Amino acid sequence: MQYETTGIIPDELIPFYDQNGKWRGDSISWVSTAPKAALKAIRESHLPESRRTATSRSGPILLTALFWRSKQPLTICYAEIKGSLIVSTSVKIHAANLRRVGGHVIIRSSHKIYLPNLRTIGGKFECAKGFLLNAPRLREVGEACRLIGVVPPKLERVGGTMTSYWAFNWEAPCLKTVAGALLFHRAETVIAPMLEGVMGNLVVDSLTRKLTMPRLKYIGGDFLADNVTDLRAPLLRSIGGDMDTGSAVGFYHPDIRVGKSWKIHPTALNDWVIRQTARQALRGTDPDFEI
Image (cartoon, rainbow, N blue to C red; front, side, top):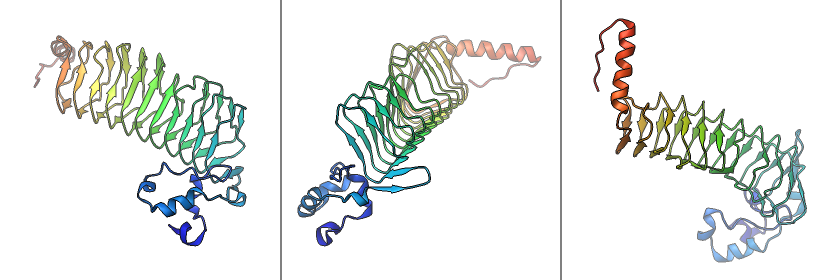
């Protein structure tokens, strides 16, 4: 490592220090294969204060990560945090000017979390206690996302698995893609009008009765919605794994391709044929189906 031979901390390692200049980067992937002597040196290093911040038109930038363990409320004045934002205590968080976090945002607070201008999180976003989360402009999470209660209304993309807890009426009006699984715990209704694809599994729990995803076209893994009675996904055509829509009497289409098995409602196919026949009759033509 460069630090072992020169004593100079490379710029690319700065986000793995915290706001006090302490090394926090042992979680990054290459650490386990780095030479022991180099690791010992970097762990004992201290980032000078002059290299921890920069300025921009939007406001000051924290070039490191920000770790908070104090029981005092946290006020963040930075416009950007290059590293991660880790809050391990339950405190109020006020970050009116924060626009971007390059690393992870992990917040274990159940108090008010005020992030009105945050737009992008480069890593994962974990806020599984944050019923009072206020992030109205958040558009993108680069990795996994774990939230409780409502979804940020402008959220468009999640780069990993998205897990939602205790959002009884779950609605994501702008969400377009989820690059991992989409998992729900304790959601009665699920509405995602813009969602087009889920790369992993889409799983709802036994409480969910209504699921509306009018633009959904593909699910890369399993689609498990066995207790959903009102299922509206008219464009869905591709399922990579198993599919269970055993309670949705109105859900069937012959062009849906399922990678493994599909459990449908016992009368769904027959009801679909009846509906198609009625539509053709209203048009004044003879029905001609390949089922």
